[in-house]
Image (cartoon, rainbow over all chains, first blue to last red; front, side):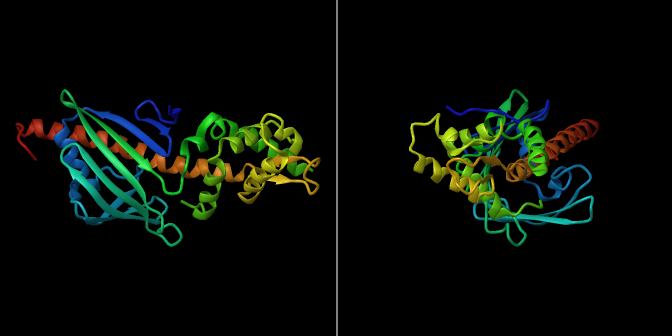
Length: 164
Length: 119
């Protein structure tokens, strides 16, 4: 049985499940519209990335085997490029793709994202599941409060140890 | 993302074992000797030492030279790196979902004003 470590906020539910980070959100929009907005190159730029960032869609071919590459321009003036390949495309309910942070040192590792859209009577539940590479147990890494509140304790301990 | 990726993989691998996570949880409460760390487990001291070596190589613990009675102590830096990395990724998506929510509302308002129809 998976132990859920709750990570999200009041709008987005987030938790780990074994090797996956799962995020869920219900949108007040019909599924067809949500699907279009997720998969339209002209629209991705209107929502993807942290607030204040802009996005350039260099490539986005939404079909199995198709490639994508987007560049997030940070508020600090840096570029964060991401790329990958679509594995499964089943409108309007399922999108599976790989994601690579395209800078040297990070670009040999691909995460796999699975997005499913469920129709809830005119609203849409989006479940985004990310499987990180070489993480045998993301759940283990985040479980039992080791990360999160416990880090404050560790910081205080580190300071104590540094005193010798 | 500033974190060195190989270091993260090593940290994750070190954390992937429940015995090692229990060891870290114990060390979070304070230093302990190898003997003290072995106590809760039905494992030999060499078996515990193997786990400690993995944790040491991942930079998660520091260990005294004469392993059996010198204390092990926790080093929180790698854990902070993992939390930062996952936190950044999660925050990226949380904010994207917030923006997506706003954008979907805006699109539907526009469609209503135009008298509906597919965009």
